[in-house]
Image (tube, rainbow, N blue to C red; front, side, top):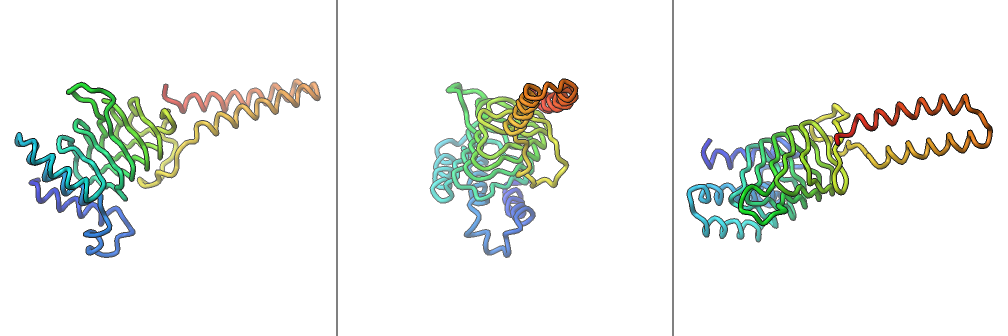
Length: 234
């Protein structure tokens, strides 16, 4: 696929993925993400041919117009949709696969000053929630989800979700539609629920001396705890 075919595909991607788009005319005024990709595609094409200053100039102009900063050296696949787009940053050595959905304020950044690979690799069909920061030379596996405002500094296996600061990884627990990025495991809530139930059992036993009820409750809570640990990827 040549450059202009890729650009046309970027515009078609918005039509396929955003139900808020009512007509093609809106693409020219309400979708900075697709224009950010437009400027990126041109600057990246020149960058791969050995140009340096002109691609960075085009990139800077694109950033001024769209508030999206994509380094021309980054590698971005087909079907990528940057929704709302404001404040998105994609670093020089970042790799983004096909059909990736990126929301506003996302950063694919580096944590090293080395000149090698220092930005993340995002495999295909990943969803990155608003405000998430994915940092360093790590890999987010295919079909993974990154919760909003999470800070990801370790690899995320395929088909898993990462939530929190720093992000912790849990196995995917839902079979929802691809855009159900609001369905995320609340790891802290689950752990606190377990602790509160454990405290309630101990208080009940201290007041009543009912050891039989405590033993039964302990077995149920132990099962909950084992399931919680099994869901976590350490």
